[in-house]
Image (cartoon, rainbow, N blue to C red):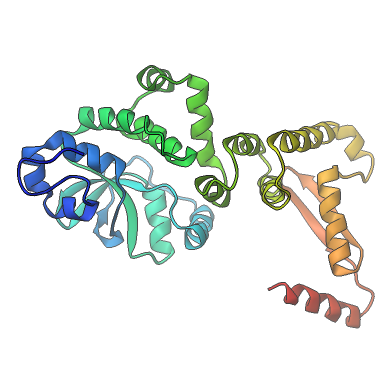
Length: 301
């Protein structure tokens, strides 16, 4: 990073920049925006106020609870974006759902990208510049694309021209943000490849998606092997009449059923009722056997 005209050297840290931001903005606004666009600051949740012009007012309580549980386990993978009002107050630009869930999870600080007044044009240039870096992982690239959409109102087609990438490439990256947070975290840590992630994002059944992900990491499956598993599952699922007229399960679910039966030492029936919906029935013949099963289950906790 280049140096400012005064005492502060950009790149020393986001906290140092925020402590001197008013002076820095006067002397070197473009460098300040560039630094803020690529840095995540931890700010107090209590200092974040809702944007009064936010059109969305209603949030699903169950979905917020699920996101809150995810944040407790994996942290907040996608930072919020706020506009700095003063030294102690920020206003949300995007991420109200994430902010609500963070509060529900009991967080006192939240990761955030910080915007300053009148920085729209500079921000767009900084984000486009940032996305060309070679050290970004796939999730960081996806988040940057999403920021260009949310904060700069750029279409996928226009973005394609700006960053020199195919529109389909941009869309594929953005779809990664729909994956389960556990899978997103694995992408960030390079535990699975972009190829694996692209295969998983095409699986709408969340339970199956997670099961495949864990199978990838456990068995070190290749991308081709994962694609073959998904194709076989889709072929079996597509034959609805066959499934409706018999008790046959797709192989991937039958494997789960067999594994549970082996683990519990009793008959287990897995029944599908729809996409991602079903039930597991565990058979027992006596109170003693029930107690044995409870001991086995409790032993896993």
